[in-house]
Image (cartoon, rainbow, N blue to C red):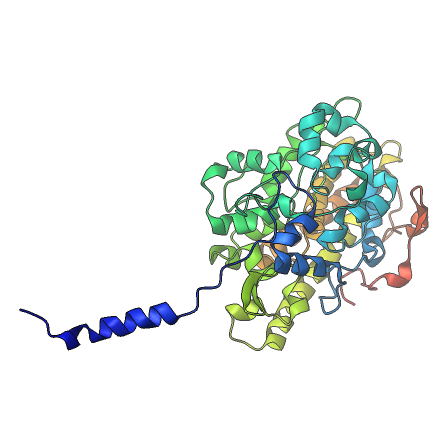
Length: 469
């Protein structure tokens, strides 16, 4: 059937409108990013909104929780029992709340040098140059003194912390894992690094440094490498029990000796990914680290992922209200409530472990003590130490996985009590009059390290032995 002219009228009108419509706005790139470019400012010429957002990370932590945050508080003064638990380790000399990612290398350079005795390996998460230094230097990267390896970083980047290249491919801007040890760790979990989804990468680019790791030592206590202790775990279930088992499976993994107890120990470092991914409610809901700490935002007429990496508590819970319809103040109160409960148990377990350490110290000095009872006390103390430190080193005061945090601390308190009980029994059996409560003797730590960092009890949150304020 032949169409009349008016049947084509709608098509003609649409063609006219299309011809008159303004062209779609295209993102204008003012420069290209050279391969391997480390300087964030160069990336900022192409992605100025993201760069400006990232540089806001220089801001302090006002508005954050009374726990953790990004203000450089003295954590040893806030939790004095750690002076006993970490006695003999660099962390027991100076242990501050870290600032934002911009400062992460500068903060390491400013800390007491005793914290950098492990050598160049300490740069592995602190500098974007770490992967290429490791490739260039081989074993020497791990074993050379920290200052010598650090001196190989270009002078203009001597204090450069997190950089765009740590998380992005400069050619495509795709998320990428830049740290060799994360690839190895994922393979240990049975996870193929080449098959990760974008949402998984939005967690794992953070997890490549927000994890606990081991620095194995040779017979001269020189560092020989770096690995994540996930060999006995599986994706979505990395437990403190499995981490402890890996650490204790090889004497090379025992990095230091606790002075009061004489026990050689490994260490637990900021295990955010391990705690969060172990079946937490947000993990099971498919929430990535970036969803909460780098939420999308409008800048003019553009939409970007915020690179002002921070706690939702500092941003009026904006990230949380993307999914939760409650009032921001109500959400904030729930976070603080969880953290208060975890902190209470953390303080109780930590104080109990410090009491056990002092009891073991006395037993070590007592002649004729029952060695079997003392050895049992030490084994219980080890378990308490790893569990208390697991939650104390993790940067959410348990919020990333409240149920697991309370479970771990409950076990830690139990093991600390058992250690104290066995040490007391050994002392009584040896005829020693045992006090009801051991003096933690914090005056020993009045001045610590080469910088003689003072213990400032006035900063202490003044928790009683049972964890109440």
